[in-house]
Image 1 (cartoon, helix red, strand yellow):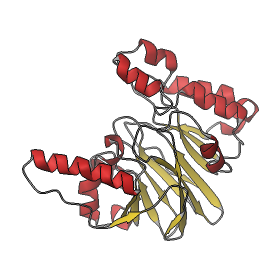
Image 2: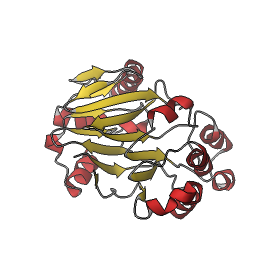
Image 3: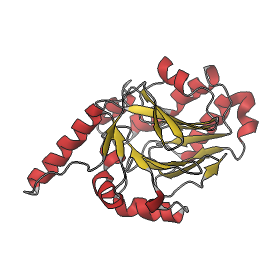
Image 4: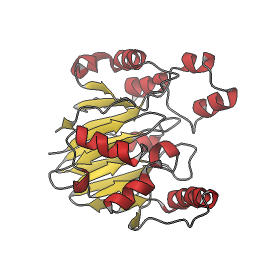
Length: 270
């Protein structure tokens, strides 16, 4: 059995639980500690049963609750060395402003993109993604022949990303913005440029191009994630994806899902 529970996805905070029968892994900790614990309990996930936390990159919407959560649960935290350095720099700056000493993670483990590692009975493969962080990664998780992919916060889908997310049974992938909504929206031009950059965020149209040209159509569930609340609408993201899936679209009735910021997504189990 493999289960994924998306607790939140969007620019205000991201986290999800990937679980097997014996192992439970939190992917990112972008909400407050209290909110993560509340959403876990709300979806039937026991915070005390977590085996580890794995981190994709150091942006606040992915690590905002990490310091408090890791201290409270006392579980190991896995990240790349450069991501840890960037995270700890932020922690030191916060501590300096509060006139106190910075505290590092008590249980810290490092991994490198392109090299898999094991947590319990889950094999995790981190892979490099194009985003404006120091060492950002996506993940695939394999348990007993079932493969789950989580890839958000990327400006475009590289050949490396395509290779890693091939043959996923559950795929969670970014559909961040509608390009026209972003262009006429309220963000400053500098922020719009960042989002549109090849190290920014994936648009509905860019994801649709992947679905049309490169997607293998094999997932039992597709989850559209990291939707912008300012520059996208769930119905637009779904419509563009369904059109791009073409002949596969009928397969995804009830199985093409949208992860939201405001509430958890119902757990998916294979």
